[in-house]
Length: 89
Image: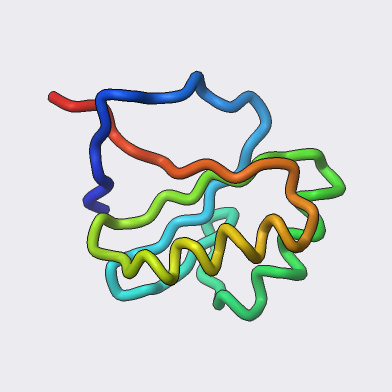
């Protein structure tokens, strides 16, 4: 996965789960392939565990897809959503 880089990064989250989105818009949650439509139910479980969601999207993933996943997580009560990036080399 080719994740964008940033010189500015937040401190690492302590309790989190990762949603990965490939440039072909394939979605993985908890290392399992899933669909965006099925994420709501899975985010409900993440909410009850009090875990933040980190979205790790390929740099060529449409921004609309990233925002759709972020909004879905927040609509299902996930406490916070962050975007993954890599540090510059």
